[in-house]
Image (cartoon, rainbow, N blue to C red):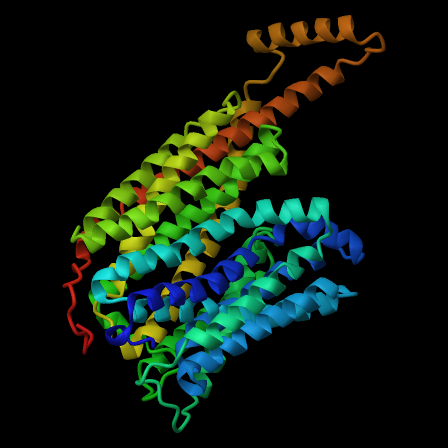
Length: 519
């Protein structure tokens, strides 16, 4: 049923719905818990450093499973592994919601990440096989709706559920979606004929090094800023272990006969270039999406709900434009042209964000997000379709696992980069601004006298000039933070813009070609 040559039109869309549902709930789970952490912390009497393991444990186990999904599908059978992942993800979600202690919650989140890690690559591989080559753009549009929209809706949905019910329902909502996904998968998903379970070859060293390397790397990215990066021995040790393990993993995987992750697919220049573009694109996307709520809530005084409303229109824009991109590709539009246009629009939106200020109104902030959303719709769909154009079906699961891992790592590195540079640039601008806030500056003297007079008029108990200095200091911090946000958005804009020439490295998909080898 997964063989596109024998697939009738109605079944393609049933399969699309079947695999999009678990992808959506899994991707949303990476961000839906963030806003619930303070409630979890209070409910389970945990410290701040302890409760963040609720996020880290999920990300680590998720990152380890994603690249070996193709291998696991071959070992156990794709349908069987998909059903196992769905059941494990759904069951562990229920355990998360009912967890009486933080230890049980973290353990359940590890299991949830193991179950959820395989859902994205399997879903993408099934979609690409279920649709003929010329309709891959439309297939990726369906997949992209879940991948792009889910992390944006996650904080909004999580905040609403936490405020109106309890944080436990953030996990319980996975139960009906998971049951429906299991039911649909049992009915409509079948293993393709080339997946034949025979003798199992276990690349023990590859599996071990990948687990250690990605696990340590994800912890470093998640906790690096909080631990002051390389000033922490913990971060230094984990970074060394991650680097050595991953380098050794690459060397071993290129030599063994039956690797757990087949890195030889990178011989295809289109696949290699597509992965680099995906990494950098999501590096900038997730970095900017993380910064926006911080800017809105800390500097502009927005509530979590209103910050979500600013992000929401961008997700809707992506949702609307992705089917259009898929339809244009089906009509023969070169995906490289759509991709180049999408990247240029994304870069433009980030340049707009670099012009934010402390007087910006709601529409001035929302508009760049809408522009970015349109760009993402033209980014993900043609990129995914072009990247997999020359990958054999036998390698589709393996290649999809690598592609999804690269996307997730790009997002993780982008978040770590944005928060670190924001902190450093805030300190830099604060030092520059403080130099001008001195008693010898005529402008400072004038403003100081004006604020003091205002306080005397409006506060009968005003006696201390220190209150005036506190007002100045608070404003210096706000201005320094605003300038830092501008700097980071500006960097992301240039990082995105330099991707435009790289789009022409990608080969144009050649219609209904039969793919039998990696070029």
